[in-house]
Image 1 (cartoon, one colour):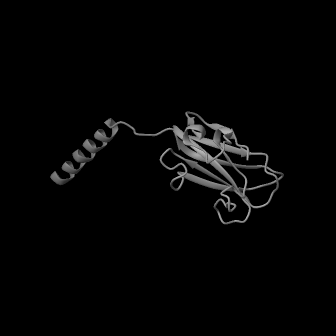
Image 2: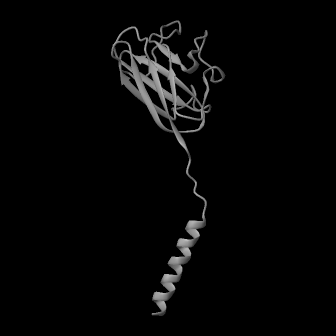
Length: 142
């Protein structure tokens, strides 16, 4: 009987302590990305979502791909915490899941970046970043 009472008291204390602890739920959002100007429906469209530390340096936070129909491809990244991100989109014509380059260093495949930055040279974080504070829809031109 003493063991039963001790067990019940411990369960009640544990339940009370858990009820008092703050909830650490992180609010997340979705980012829908549309490309509507592909020159053809060949290959797949690859989308990568990156943080500052990952952008153009490391594997992205999230990646997805979509088939292309009538020049249009769309993906939605789910459960994205609030913060700053950048997106790179690549029309992967040959299925090797990477950008191919000409001998002079110019890309062979069409690509685009969030904020539709198309400068000479590779895109920069400062130009491509955007803030997520709510569900977001972006149109990226390639």
